[in-house]
Amino acid sequence: MSEAFEPKIVAFLCNWCSYAGADLAGVSRLQYPPNIRVVRVPCSGRINPLFILAALQNGADGVLVSGCHPGDCHYLSGNLVARRKFNTIKDLLAYVGIEEKRVQFSWVSASEGGRFSDLVRQVSEDVQKLGPQRRLSKEIA
Amino acid sequence: MSAAIRDAIRAAARPLLAEGKVSLIVGYERGSNGYRCRPSFAARAGDIDRLEWDSTCSNNLAVFLPGLFQRPPQKKGQETPLPRIAFVAKACDLRSIVALVKELQAPRGNLVLIGVPCTGMVDERTVREAVGGAEVASFADDGKAVVVRTAAGAEHRFEREAVVQHACRCCQFPVPQGADVTVEGPARTPGDNGDGLVKDIEKLPPAERWARFSAEMSRCIRCYACRQACPTCYCKECFAEQNNPAWIGVGAEQTDVSIFHIVRIFHQAGRCVECDACLRACPMGIDLRTWTKKIAADVRALYGFTPDFDPTGKPPLVTFKEDDAQEFITEPGAQGHGG
Image (tube, rainbow over all chains, first blue to last red; front, side):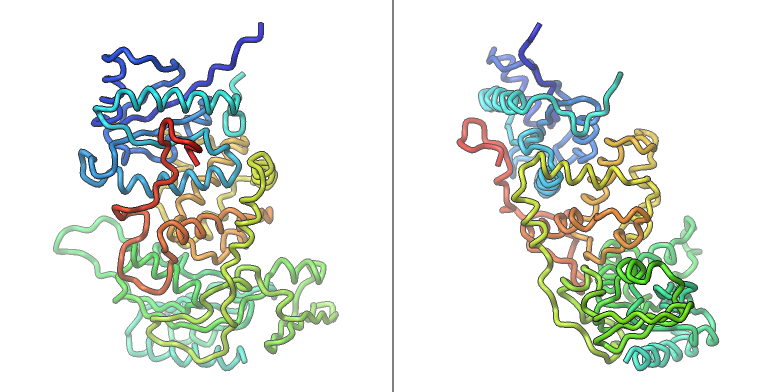
């Protein structure tokens, strides 16, 4: 009965770049592991660190956040302000003892379908190696 | 020593009220228990004589600022004017006040700040433990030794440095700057910022860090005293109490508690002045410092920002630079990705 652990990863993708990048990966028939659950957000600046923690608490094994490359934001500076937020929360989560690779951040543009599939593969492998996330997940009977 | 400073505070405060420059003075007065002074709100000339100063004035008075400047929604053209309020401020209180001014909680022009240099405040918990929680009749501090006399008549003598708060021992800013009136007095030599603590924890493997964090937080009773005591926790509605969406549960469930603390500490990024008000307020004595220090150290390291005495500029997390650090970004295929 021992099946390989398949992590559940919540991916927050920005509407303008990363979501379109994911779309391109699909349209181009690029393969990537089916472990991600995509949540589309208007901009990476929309990400509240509570989104990440809520995902972990509700059973996600990992979280991926992706937005436009710096300088390419549809709202000009959304991802630049978000970058500071992300860096700080990532450091704090690592500091309290959540493994660093559980929560990852990246930039994927609308034309980078290949990069998107590589990213998902890599993040899935990282989280698979870490095993199920139990530290912040609320056990549901 | 502290009597001279007390008199100087009263002398600075008296004309402010008498001349109507302020309607309220926020300072310290003798508390009902001898272990610490309590906040005092002087609105009449007679109240000025209650103002005190000694080495038990550890409270961060900036916590009262947002509430004092809150007004109900205003009709255009019929706004009630904002009050003018004076604060007795140690350097840490002053830095918190500056952080609040930066976040537009009060116009600087409506504040009169009476800066008081600080030699470090005595840690209430240490003293209380040492005297066995006995009722304190008098508390004397000559700058070298602290003498506590209990109501039962016993005398306890402590070397001052041994009972000064950890936050004060590593305080980098003992002298207030940019106050409207600065009282003359001795100040301690600035310490290192105590980042050694953060560096030690960072060396541990994640599992041990988590064990430490969860062991401390498992004692949390969710009384929110840390949040109430913190000057820069002033949201009218805290994320912990929002119910649409309800970010976290209200009980003492472990993940709810952990997330509450992670996010509360995260929200202090660029605002925490490391005054340890949260730590003093915690009835369970949870060592919040270990984690609040990290957020302050991180903002210092990443954005070169320390909450100081300069009320201009923006808080670091509402702004950005094009070349901000982004080593934390995952580059698919790159070696050693994800940090």
